[in-house]
Amino acid sequence: MADWMALEDVRTAFANQVDYCRANDAGLTASVVQAIRDGIDGPGAFRARLRDWPGKPMADALPLRAAGGLHALYLTGAAPSLGPLYAGEAVDAGPLVNAAIDAHDAALLPWLDGPPQTNEAARSSNYAAAMLWLAARGLPGRFDCIEIGSSAGINLMMDRYRYDLGGVAVGPDDAAMRIAPDWRGPPPPESSVEIVALRGCDVAPIDLTDPEALLRLRAYAWPEHRVRAQRLEIAAAEAARHAPDLVEADAAAFVAEALARPQAVGTTRVLMHSIVWQYLGAERQAAITAAMEAAGAKATPERPLAWIAVEANRQTFRHELTVRMWPGSGEPQLLAAAHPHGAWLEWMG
Image 1 (cartoon, rainbow, N blue to C red):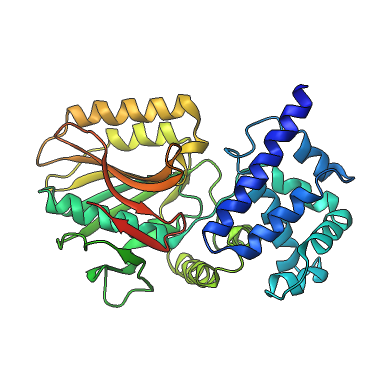
Image 2 (cartoon, helix red, strand yellow; image 1 turned 90 degrees about the horizontal axis):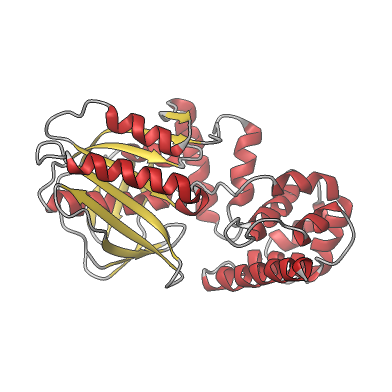
């Protein structure tokens, strides 16, 4: 009974991912995920590991781990038969995907070993919008930023990007990358924002200058969203020019260390993260929350603290931009509903 229930959880996770992809204009990726689900009872170690998944398949992003492996086969030229599918041609994904799984069983297995790392530059537009809001609320517009779950550190280079947020501009004129999400609702407040520091950590940081590591990020970018791939290439070029300040560290330990550092007068220290909270586990979540609330209790108007999060709301099944700030109540403030890859923001702040 337990094995049957586990398999049903896996099937449900794949079905939910198909629906999610379709709802986010990712029909190609939806067809790949559906094809993997349809063939899950087939032979091979890859499919067996999917069927016997020991964790929570949706929280572990199991369907996206599997889909990333298939995309990598195409990107490396290992499975040229997948070419018509990933080119967007009107083909039946089922036979193509399952033939590729049969032929590359061993090569696909490592893609199940860890969660996807989809480091999206456009997600940082949420950070920029939240900084505008914080500055408009009277916090110093000079931001000392720390990020957890930074993956390859793409968002740690956001001071090199230019944002158009509902007509409100943030960032340098000569930016390496320009990001203009589809803005819904009223514009954010116009404020002066300056990023004075950006530091981040990841339990398994990705080096954008490493071809194999860059392939992993390319594989997890949904192929039909070509602008994501373009941004990834720009970010890789920027990292080669000047690497982001990214270290390998446990998220809770990194936050505690960062909060203990001296904070300059007239700067707002801000913790940021996007689509990472679910992967931390209850113990780390509690440790980070306790550290932030303890530091918040000591915050002053000259040295305030803020917490910007872009995470999934498990009750509403949407991604939300929320902010906490100290001095003050520290209660979460909902600023926007957000596309998981930064394609749009619906401003509520």
